[in-house]
Length: 344
Image (tube, rainbow, N blue to C red; front, top):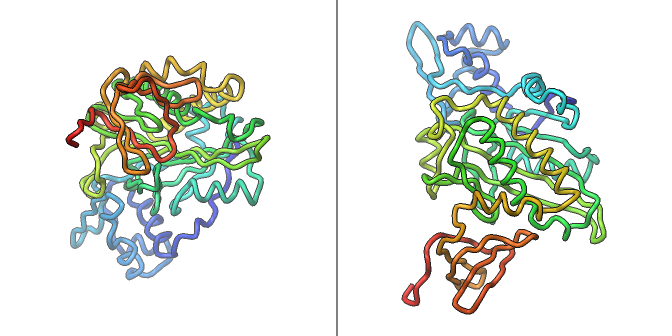
């Protein structure tokens, strides 16, 4: 796996200083402000400024007169060498870059794909995103170190229409990776969420570009909750869950990233050959709403109720309604559990 030196992610200078100080505090011990300033070659005031408002990152800082600063929940930082070690022989398939902060890993990688001809297998992992995005433009909220957010560029020879069902295929890869880690109970929700009974665990955002006849390129954005500090959970307007709720010891972030990439690589290579059809049965076996009543909210405000009967070979939802079996592509459609009655 090729690794790159960190690029400037266009974050303001104070944010860079904050991350530098947080890395020095990563051992969980007390550090004096003077000592931190000396190590970084800055003023004591610069250290104070850098540590203001870090609760926005989902972190808790203790400041004790005479002892200095200590992080209560120090983030587990990503390390390209550790990720490569976990990937082993498959490390050569990926070109990994880790940066401290960016507005959105998908936005940045998509720009590079257009302007710099980034190779297939390029991975951009971001420790903290200030403007993470989900499907339908919804925001993705995560703190520093309590989530894993990254984007993967993958190039296909087919045209854009040949990518039908890709978001569902990616969901299968995520469930396989969690299973490898011994984390059970994850399910899939059409078209691009990984959920538990408590709520949303992970999201998938695909953004594609290409020609009508091919080739095409897709940036696959992944966000998965490792834990949910109150400062982060309070920003989210839907039920959510985390790996910490599913396992006594949440997985190491570097190992998690490596296993996710390994499973994604296998699924994407297979998708390029056989499409989604070969994964359809596996996806349906994990679908949270399989054979359950649900309703679809359409862009025009209408709702359609029915029983979810899985998906087509192209990833479209199959809904059994009083009017017969109907299929729906993802688009602007939103799926929710429970039937809609005439009085709703």
